[in-house]
Length: 85
Length: 393
Image (cartoon, rainbow over all chains, first blue to last red; front, side, top):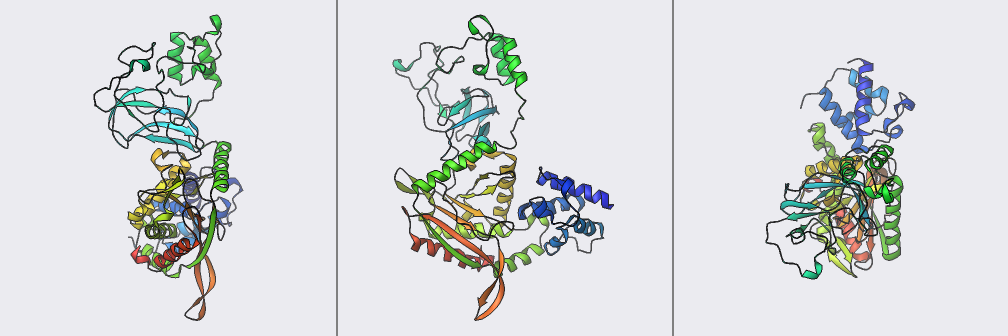
């Protein structure tokens, strides 16, 4: 997936979790949890949705790499090193 | 119309999901009701056949009003003649019924359309049918016909002026919910002599266990710390049953089962606490699924009647974006609320040395009419001990 495709996917998935999320004011390097009011349950649901849509299993230890839009795009664009569960 | 919480006085029927003749069983969802807490799905607790629908779509009725009659197959009991409405055709009044919910209310004429004062509404038959089809309450229609009678055009004009409602109302009226919260909390502060206790609990072991457990699981099976906190609370309530129940009619009624109201904050403001039933008997993964499910449905506005008003105690967990501790207010008629603040790293003394540990401020607000601080303190230390052995939760 290209960076733009990943960004569009993330907005779509977050939009399902937090329908009122306003992406227009979201900058690339701010913490999406704060900017979009996502709690740990919401963020966990995002990780589940990413797994369901892309097959990418983000281990819990890597969650902090996906807190910003920039970080999440870079992480999901990079090839996965993890062993499939 | 069931009372979905102590503070509810009335609800508006927004959708019927059954029609006369439909078979229902315990747990069937038969209608959607709009309340101060948003749209709630109404379940039945009887098996039978829908005999009659008594409240039309769009009508707001007080708690206790019969919404529908369910024929459960038992023979009709004869009614004393005095109760038979003169206007009601024979055969319609003496029907064996199981009421859907709520206490019985005196029989009232359910045929035809009755205006607020009891006078029959003047409406043409075609307008009445159109109003029913459009979900318009004819009592809200200004009639332009003879003696103010309502004609088809009047109904259609009103229907056009009212914005179309989605079938399941997503969201809620924020002002009405605020009023409901204020009413419940004012009652609590007025009636319940609260006491408050705090225990800071070391979560080092629990979170290490969780991390290791989650590392072997795919995302949808992973647990959040909230599941552990909820399960530990439920198990501790077993040992302190006087914190689990309702204070009704001047006395404590122990809960039949440990049904934990889980406080969910709604986007855009507001709070609702659907019950996770029998939380002490659920596994951690069952609790996690239940949490995910009720949080999602609370925010979408599709909670069920059995999930509201049935909680025997409340747990509020502020989560990772909340404050460090909460001194919570009991939701009447419950007698206790357990609060968990944000999990934080703090210097902690372990075996005489200072370490950085994850801890959570755990609070209890209890009702002095039922328990005192001694029982409450034992309860909190019980939660603490349970969280030191997470693999046993």
